[in-house]
Length: 334
Figure 1: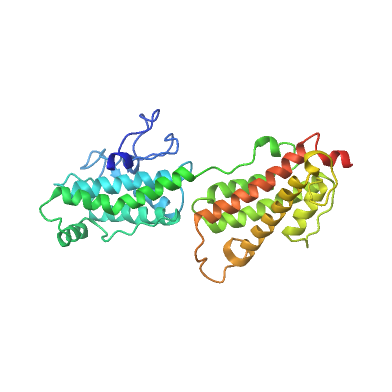
Figure 2 (figure 1 turned 120 degrees about the vertical axis):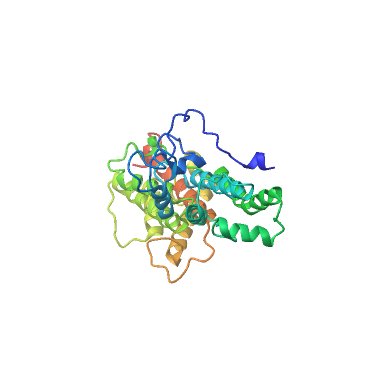
C-alpha cells in the first residue's frame, strides 16, 4: 500500500542535476532534498563545522508558509514536504539517522500544516516535534517496536497524502485558448483575470469565485467595446451578460438561422445566462472576493472554486469564439 502512495526521493526525469534546496528546473515537482540548501546556516565561518552540509532551507519554508512558491504547484510542494516529514519521523522512530533537530522538524510540520490547510485538507498531527512524538508512541503501544512506529506514522499521514493526490488528479489549469482572445484590441483585463484564477482555483476559493465573476464582467465589456456599443457603469453582471449576448445574436430571444436559432441551442444560451447570474449571486452573498464578508465563509471549498471558474470559462469562451467567428450569426444580422 505504502509503495503505491508514497513518492519517495526519486527526482523526475530530466531534473537529476538540480541542486538541493532549489526549485528552479524541477518542472513543478518537489522531493525532500529540495527543502535543503547546501550551505552553512549555522553562523560558522567558511571551513567551519557543518560548512557545505545540507541544511534545512528555512527561508524557503517561510515563503511557503506565506503562500505558493513561483512555478511550483501547491500540491507538489505539499507532497514533497509530506515525504520529508514522514522520512524524518520514521528515521527518528527507528534508531535515528534523521537530519533535522527538534526545532527544525517543528518548522517543517508547521509549514506542511499551512500548505495542506490552503489546499482544503488540513493536517493536524498529535505532536509538534520529535520529543513529543516519542511521548506519543510510548502512550500508543509503540514502545520497543520500530515497525509499530512506522505504521503509526503511515496511519497519521496516509489520509493527507491520499487527499493531496486527489487534489492533484482533479486539478486542471483553467484557461482561454489564445485564439479566443488574440483578436481583441485590449485583452489585458481578461488575461489578468485568467492569471488570478489560475493562481487561486485550488487554494483560495473566495478569490476564485470573485475572479470568475470579474472574468465574465471583463469579457462582456470587451464584447460590447468590440461591437462599438457603449457600456453603462450602472449595469450589474446580468445586465452586461444580456447586452453582450444580444450584441452577438446569442440571446435566447435573438432571431437567427442555423443551429443558433434552434430551441436546443436557445435553451443552452438561456441556461448560460442563468449560470452567470448564479455566479454573481454567489459572489455578492460574501462567498467571493470583491465584497467584504460579514464573517467566515463557512463551507466554501475548492470544489466551489472549480464550479465558479469552469462556469465562467464556458461562458467567456463561447462569447469570444463567437466574436472571432467570421461566419457567426451576428455578422449576418448587421
